[in-house]
Image 1 (cartoon, helix red, strand yellow):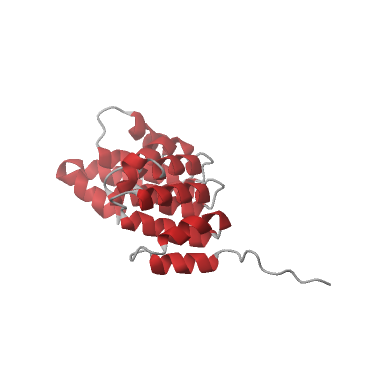
Image 2 (cartoon, rainbow, N blue to C red):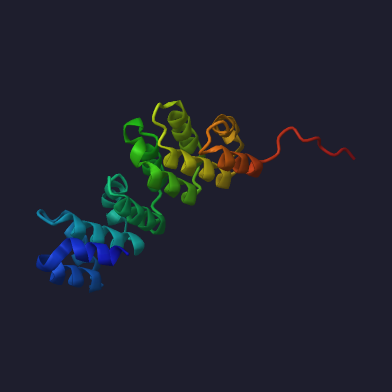
Length: 193
């Protein structure tokens, strides 16, 4: 749970500040945490999460940075808050993170976020990410699997070629077959009157 993790990071020295930041309803006070120098990461994460879940777009930049963090728990919390935030910049930011070949190992949460958003950027970004992973010597199969599953949920027929390319990969084949089954049927005969 986010609160327990951040309380642990705050330690005894930051316990009172953590409790105050978690309890206050003053959005201005929470937003100041994002810009004040010297604030620890746990405090910035808590502030960004609270603001994002409340729909306050001042949290957007901080949440995108957290979505790109190496710590999966921070990424998951940021993705949750970004989904709640409903900022129109989110799909483009998540797509940029997911398709960055230098960050492929950390793309799991941006990929999942793109699937949840179901934005126009979602399917093209997942296709590009999966193509890059399949061509890589180190395919980061968990990220590739999230792409395959996401493409199945999105049901975008543009994903057919890359999903077919995923079929021979043992860790992806079952999910790829399932995803292909969820795509619209192409070339089916049409009924004539």
